[in-house]
Amino acid sequence: MSMKMAVGGEFFDRIRQNGSYYVDKTELLYELVHETDNTVTLFTRPRRFGKTLMMSMIEHFFDIRRNSKELFEGLAISKHEEFCTEWMNQYPVLFITLKDAEGLTFQNAYAKLKNIIADVCKKHEYLEDSGKINYGDRTIFENLMLNRASDYEVQNSLLILSRMMSAHYGKPVILLIDEYDVPLAKANEEKEAGERYYPQMLEVIRGMLSTALKSNDFLKFAVVTGCLRIAKESIFTGVNNFASYSVMDEKFSSYFGFTQREIDRLLKDADLEDKREIFKEWYDGYSFGSEAVYCPWDVVNYTADLLYKKTARPKNYWRNSSGNGIIRDFVERKEFRVKPKFEVLMNGGSIVQTISDELTYDSLHESEENLWSVLLMTGYLTKANPEEDSSEVALKIPNREIAGIFQDTVVNYFSDHVNDSKQKSMMDAFWNGDEKAASEAVSDFLWQTISYMDYHEDYYHAFLAGIFVGRGYAVESNKERGLGRPDIKLIDDDHRRVLIIEAKKSDSAAQMEHDCEEALQQIRDREYAKGLDAYQVYCYGIAFYQKSALVKKL
Image 1 (tube, one colour):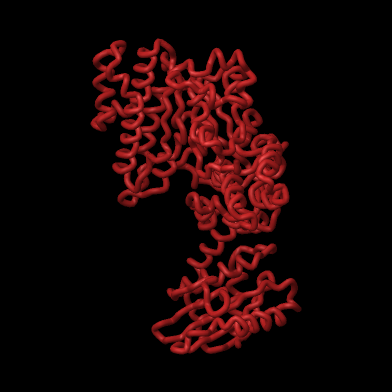
Image 2 (spheres, rainbow, N blue to C red):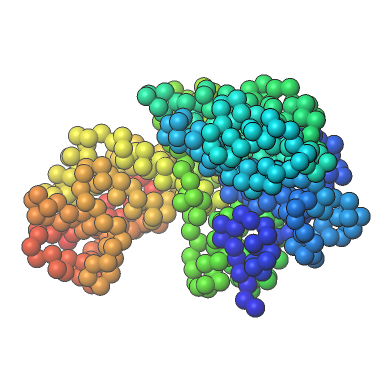
């Protein structure tokens, strides 16, 4: 049978039942119960590092309504036979994920949260007919399920549900809360009538979590996941026996993300061992505690692509999975003077910063220290030295994928803020055939943006496209034309003219003249101007070397 990868797989049972490849993380179950005495355990990790799949695995192991023996057959946890007999499918489990509780306004986000709670109630509809539950709880349950609950009932929903489940089964409840901070992150980003709705959403989430986790007599234990650990006094006030494990902590460090040993086994099973260095360059480099790990989202996606087509090239899968606004926010904060630090990071170096793993979303932008902490906790940066264990941490960009996100963000920011009159002068130079003025203008723009010494050709393509889009032109990049794909084709319909550019990255300043001629020859040979007889066509070759550009016309 061919190997199958579950791209986007968040349901443990489906992965196992469908025979999809599963990297065994089940030993966490034993460590969670036998090697800790936590009433509440919080795991914070970047997005796309397997938090929801882990929670699904925990749910299926403990849930009293399931028979999970076959799902866990042959996995690491099955070797702990006494533990499995004592714990597998022996406790009621209440699982809720808040990852979709978001919206442009508080009303929309709150409505989605109520829908999520209603769906959880429908999964436990049997409680409505239980003779062991009092009338008051049954009435509130019905209100929650039918989406007509009051604010008070919403904030007490997890406590009420756990009390009902405990009464029905005669056992304490295991509570799983996935992505607890997504509603708060989105509330801090979005604006309603010019203001973020963070305070309103904080009140709701704090109410839900504090009632469910603080002095809940019906709780066996709880596991909570998120991207950031929100300061305890902000949301977890009064929660006893509370333990938090972030990317800075050693314990549980290997359970989120793929270790090198796991990657080596996966590549061997997929007959992709020749791709080992590509995986390492693009998707490795994260340090959780002292453990080096790969991003599982990227690994699964690229493996799936390679299983379909052995010559598939690596992509930036993370960039397309969510927004990257935090980097943009950083670049825009001129008062922090971060440009020199960004230059060090983008050139493969490291910077030392003070890091805090207790933050609040409404204070993220108050200090440069907070923003560096967020970049670390959310996976855009990582520890340069995995063994380092202090609040003063050397930070670096983990891999080529994240370096690409930094580059794109800087290029796009620059394109949005470049001086309008200088852009016009540059365009006039191109339309007038002035090679010297065009060379100087493009070089000047390069010097204004962040220095990045290990430029890739794609960086220059994005740089040029960004400048031209900023002038309002219709820009095509790498689209079919003639016998090939020019790097840039810009159409000015108002004046019936077209600009075609082929760009080259030179290895030295002395090589730039030759590379310009090579670019122009490529325009000729591949007939990029073919079919544009109705337009006046301007063709240019541009050679880039670090922060310099040389422009030559055909």
